[in-house]
Length: 441
Length: 114
Image (cartoon, rainbow over all chains, first blue to last red; front, side, top):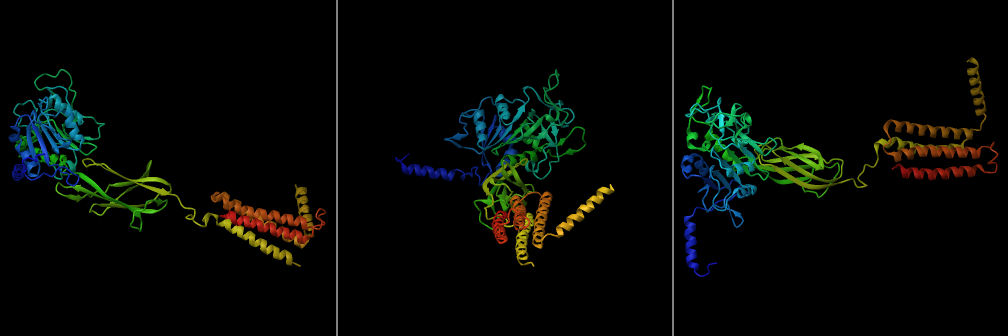
């Protein structure tokens, strides 16, 4: 491009290299933890009011870029390449994104395999509601409704209208929420959403208690609320089929410093917790969303006949074979061996003829051996592994199976021995008969 | 009925006496035929129990027994001196036919046995 002033350009590029931060590891299969995250906010004051959450992300190596949601220079892509690996949308009241961003572009971002954290509050605009619906979470249609719980509210609630909820109905998953149990309840103030029970991809991470309902706290209820009880989800997570992860929270304050630091006492309970469960919850959930936990890869699929090491191009029926695969889990920094006892392999042709659970050597190698069934055709070694909170593994390796060659059958059929004996005895009897007949006196 | 059983006993006794009068060579052939048919019946009983899995082996076994029995019966007819029809047939010729046919039969059997 600039052949005119090479020296000046060189000087400029050198300076920019020195001044700019070191190159970021972008999202890749070798290093699945997203690095560059775009944070869209309504108000830049969020940067300080939610600083504990953002600092926890930065301390784990992410590069956050804060922008106003209606910033005219916003864009997620340039020349077909994504500029960021993750998106945090803390802009509930934005009605139109600035720049080239809109609802379909956000959906495209997630469809490309990138992660999203979305938090709204009671001024949620139609735009963010639409993004949440795309991800499987349907917010209450009434724009004035918030989640109210008269039995499970936090005692520190100053307003007294029981919109500040202390909830401890968490999803039971060590992958999503970490190994340590969250003991203190989690403070929540915002709107509730429902998830379609037929949707297998979205899970309720934090559910409202059975006494909660979604309604306008300022007016009297004229009809029974549409969202009640445990069908209200306060925080949901979704893992798409391309393993992109989305977290949708009905409360932006759940991430705020005030809630993270606050003590909590649930109504009706005597225990006062010094610190709410919010910090542990948001940290662990963010770890899961950005693939620091539960991201699996399967490599080195191998199969061979028992006793051999090379992979044959075809098997024969009733052969004994072994199959092995290595599965690793990303720990945020490196690939660790994945240890489980429920990984199964199928020997599949229209339906699984063999389904075996593989045994592991605890270093990530899963193997098993079985006998090829008595059917010939083109089979597949299939591993379909889907567990709550983990990325789904779907491996298939095709292998044909042939019948016996005509000289591979057993030579003498044991069931036919009486017939063999009879035929030979008849021949013998004929021989003896002819001797006796000819030479008798 | 006493008369019935008496008649049966008399019948069997007269059959036995008549049979005792047959020449020894014919008796030898009769013994051979009985052996062959018995072997065939044993094979059929076995197949009824176990099922007809190698059907070719079953057929081959039964056919060897039945075929050789048939050939032996033909030999007996041709060799029997009381038989007017085969008066001019030398018994050596009959026996040679018997041997050759049995050879062909057992060749086929060995092939079909599997």
